[in-house]
Every structure is written in structure tokens, then in C-alpha cells.
Image 1 (cartoon, rainbow over the protein chains, first blue to last red):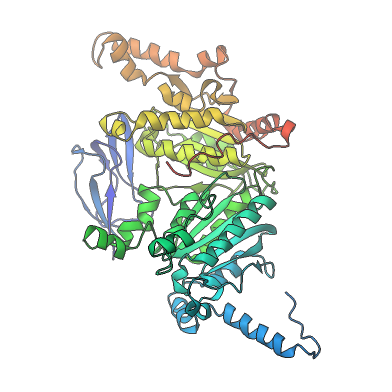
Image 2 (cartoon, one colour; image 1 turned 180 degrees about the horizontal axis):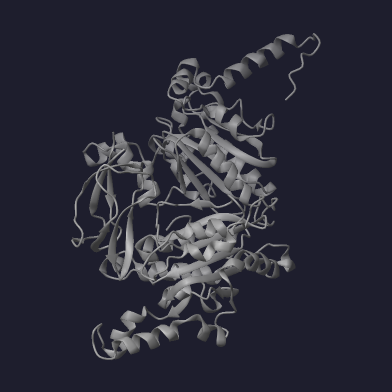
Length: 73
Length: 519
């Protein structure tokens, strides 16, 4: 099982976590929404896998390139 | 080639010797090495050629070439490790160079260098694409060592790495690729990479010797690096067969050479069937994002969108497609990533794609939804002004038709880079379009000094929003057409017909044919 890191493309704050730990995602699925530049920008799972953990909670600040969730696939 | 047995003659012994030589030349690096490849699920060079070319169409050039430097190598270098020839790919002529890694790691030597030079000359002079199936250990040792080795083997063809884009080049990196194999991948118009392959200047061993630390091959030149960071790989696939299929598909969109228009294909059934609901692909709120590729796929001919560099510069989307059977180049902002704000990677991706399209007579369609350029210190460190102007210059130098469609936002300088004003032959907009120098909410602060919650903020914002609607642009002819979203496919098909280059039979001026092949 490979460890897959889901990273945010933008600096902002976690707006909504739209998935739960244990949920299976296919490539292209949204992991969570980041509020940035007055827009809701999704963090997309580039590779499919099962969500193992979230690194941030709703409302917390994130920086571009940071890992916000770990998947296993 | 006919293999009919001739009647007995005085030359039987000579002809038998020919057959023996032929068998040795076709045996590549021998059964053991070939078996190891097969066990690893990797095709050998001749299997790759057979898969790529129409059955029976491959005719080889230089089958009996061998290493010419040391006599001891003659017998163990079939085809000198690089198989060259001509074959038909989906009934169209092409030149091929397939590296045979089982023969001295397909290293570059004097004879195989002559073979590549011949393929480049013939494909350029006769007007056909050139395909490189790359896998190579680099320059052959010890042949290239010393001043005599360097003088004999390198630099004797001043046009070896010259690219004037007379015919399309496609490259597949299908194994360890160092030296010339990587150079041809970088020079190609389309570069596909199989996962597990490595594309680098030199091997991890040499790199480790140079910097005295262990170098991981994947980190040095693996598929993630080249698809996500460098952008040198236009596409990544899992198998050799998928890589060869990708080359067939890519060449299917392009003309055989720069003096003809791209081929026209039948329009697949079901094309345009999603147009009625296309406006619903936009989210209800302007703060929400969407994947512009769904809009593109709905508009172009069914299943014809061939995306390039999908993991690099993802705020921009580039790809070839067909509209009414005719090849078009698609550029689009993708709000799904960073809201569609253009960064330097996307500028490079757009620039190289514009050069490709203009060099091979492919009209361009631009779908616009961007809040502007990513700004800040990081952008400046990445030479944002240079990249933005490279793209702008490429757009201005294009001589093929270029049409733009504004779906939602277009702000500031990005309005121009995405074809606004006279930077497209025609600008169309959906009624959902907004055009301004910046987002209204920022503009209220800049112009009026008002923040949300201040008295007068809402009224000022409402006025800014109204002034950003498309109608003012249409009233002064800055936008030539405002169209219903569901009519976009029909509009583009018709407008491409209007703008076809009928004075030159679809051929442009190729003003960027000598531009760099990467940035």
C-alpha cells in the first residue's frame, strides 16, 4: 500500500472537509475545500486511495504546497 | 518484403551467407537479454516498431550497420543498437528511430549517429513525422573517450540538434534514457513517458560520482518529476503499448509536414450532444470553481480531446481536439486549480503549445475564466514578467486562426494573454462573462477605499459588478459576439470556417518555428 499525500495548491484556510477518514476516493475526487482569494478551491486527490488522516481542521490556515491529508492506495 | 525461395544458382553460398547475416542482425542483443525484457513485461525495440507501424509497412535503413570504431565490436552490435527505418502509422508515412537497449545499452556511436542523421534528413526533405523510441545509456564508452574520440564521434553534424519544426517529432521514453535519448525527447513536439522510465542528462551512477551522494533514479528523472515539475513529459502512461498508442493518436491530429493542413476526420456520432445543458457546468456562485475540461469535452467532437501536460501548470489546460472533424488546439483556464489564476508554469505550458499549433497550422480556441496572474514574491522569483511576455509574444506572432470564448471572469493583463481585444481574430462571450481590470471586491477598496461593512460599500460594489458585465464590451465592439452557451459548438465550427486560411490552403507563416523546445 502506497502512502499518498494530498497537498493544497493555494494558501488560505480550510473551509469545509467534504470527506471522512476511511472514505475511498478515485482520482479527481475532492478531499476538502480551501478558502483562498475569496474563492472555494478544492484539494483534489490526484491518485485514488482511502483517507487515513487529516492534517488540518476546518478554519485552520494552510500554506501552498502543504500536505493536508494522507491517503493510502 | 518478399521471402520467396529463388531457384538454385551459382550464388547459393553467397545468398546463404546473406541469410545468416540477416538472422544475426535481427537477433538484437541475443535471446537471454530479450527473455529478461519479456519477463519484465517490456517490449523490445523490434516489437515496439511492429506495434507502432501498419503490418508489413516497415522498411529498415541500416540493418547491417555495426559499431565502426573497434573491430572487436562488429560482431556484437546488430544494427549498432539503434534501429532506423520508415513505416506507415495509420496509413501515413513516418520515419522511426527505435533504440535497442539490448545492444550495448543502445549507446550512441559513429554508425548509429549516421543513421539518425539520415532519418532526420529524409523525413525533413520528404515531409513526414519522425518518431524516437528512446532508451539509451548515453555516449558509447570507450569510443567517445579522449580528444580523438570526441573529435571523431561528436559534433560532426552541425544540424544534429537543430529544430526548425518542418515536420512533427514524437518521442516515447521507454526505459533508462541518458544523453541523446533525452535530448530528442526534449526536442520533440510530443513526449510520452512510461512509468518506470528515467529521463536525465546522465545516469544516477555518474550523478552520484559527481556530487558524491546516492541519487535515486526516480528523483533524478522519473515520471513524477517530468510530468509535474519540469513539464518535459506531455503524457505519462503505464505500458509500452499505451505509449505507442499515444504517439499514433498525437500524429493523427497533425499534418505530415508544415506545408499542409492537418488531416480531417469523420465527426463521431454523439458529438455536441451535451450542449443543451452546458451552462449547468458552471457553478451557481462566482466563488465556486469547476473543471473546465468538462466544458471542453462537451464542445469538441466526442472523445477527441487529447490533453497535453495534464499534471504540469494545472491552472491552464492545453490539448488537441477536433471540431467538426478538424484539428484545433485548446487553451483554457481551469478554475478548479487555484481558481484559474495564471502562474509561470501555465505561461510556459501555453507558450509551448501556441508554438506547436502555429508551427503545424492548427487553429486555436481559447476558453477564458481567470481572475488574473498569480502575483507575489514567488512569482517574481520565477521570472513572471518574462514568462507572461513570452506567452503574449507567442500569441501575437501566431498566423493561424485564433478564437476566444469568455466563459466567466477575465481580469487585467490576463485578459490580453487569454486572447482579449485584438489578441484573437474573434472574441465571443457567454452572457455570464465579466470583464474588468480586477475583481470588483478588490476594486472597491482600491478605487473608493471602502471595506465590506463600510457605508457605501454595497452600492459601490453593485456598480462595479454592473460595469463588469459583458454588455459594455459588446457595445463598443471589444467583444464581437455574445452567444448562448448552448450555441458555442456551432459558433466555433462556423467561425473557424470563416477564418480558414483559404489564401494559403490552411498553411500559416510559422514565425516561431525556431523558438525553443522548452522554456
